Length: 478
Image 1: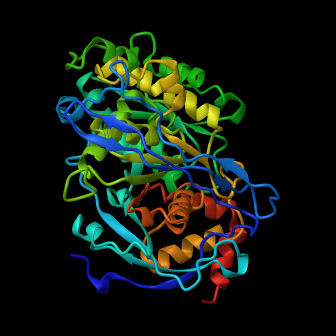
Image 2: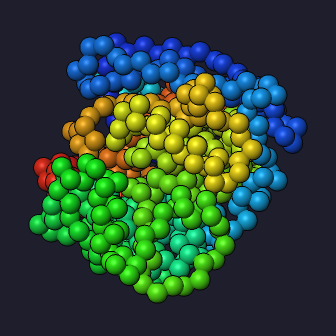
């Protein structure tokens, strides 16, 4: 059971929203029949106004809507437990899918987030919860959300990086790969995680990092340099990622080697391949944006849906930050395959809505193609409807930028909850989870669940880039 001793309380300014923002919610339920006879409802709230900045006059409207599916003989069909068991019967990078779940609570005397000066929230964190007893005993008059602590999986290989690579590395080993080529930003957590996992298995990793080498190597950039072979690529050239990855893979393979692609491997055989002469090089897309990476997220969903954890019947509002969007798509597919009443809200950070929808359509298509998925998601009207709820960040900005006050917010969260978030990725998801909690989602009996995607070593790089924000931390007197 949860213990009161594990709860601490503090006051923090978490969200600064202008007074003219209105919030309209519309409930919608779609009945979905699974092959194992269960029914699930996607109860969604829609019409949420999001902000461009503190000075925004007109708020940007974004609908919170789950996938539009119909229950017809030619509509969506779920694989259910049997299909998932077959799909997940393979070797994994992680010994088990287990993870920790904490609960963040808001018991505020003033939660009027419309007022800049009055947006003070009292937070508490319970790190010793017992599901589902804790869930069943939830007081919905208090605002709260749950956080899946994947940031604690490993010092360097954690969060969604660990989940996406969970099914990738064993497949690489089974095909006698000698070298791995991938790419990412200068502080790419994906690149560093790939390098560490390859080094553990005696594989060579070749990491193409966007931009110039920093004056001081730190954070994930330092880890990538220590564990892998780093090449810095000018931004103008990096813009064509596919071409850059292929060129590097061809260079590493040389005349006597060969370049492998997951599409080819999955289309031929999942069995082990004999070792051949010469280098065997495989390319992992940026952020592991490959269909094989979806399996690790589906494995996580199956784990979390156990009765003693989140369960299969309660409506869940799952929140995640989105870089490539692969994580959100994987979570949604997992919920879809199991017929869970879970809606995945992904906070868009690195692309526009059209780009994320293209990624969603591509990965769903590849997933169906390679894994014989009994999901009828091929028709345009269904795919265009989408399975992920893509939304803007509450305070929009160009990707990679940090706004005034966000570093201090991360500090307050860390000091009062013991949970470390960063202003680029995880703070965006934290704010959205808090926002949904404040707007009464819990009152409907729904749960807001945040997936912590890790990546917090990126703070070291941000401390170099935004020196004034981090220097201000030294001068802060609580």
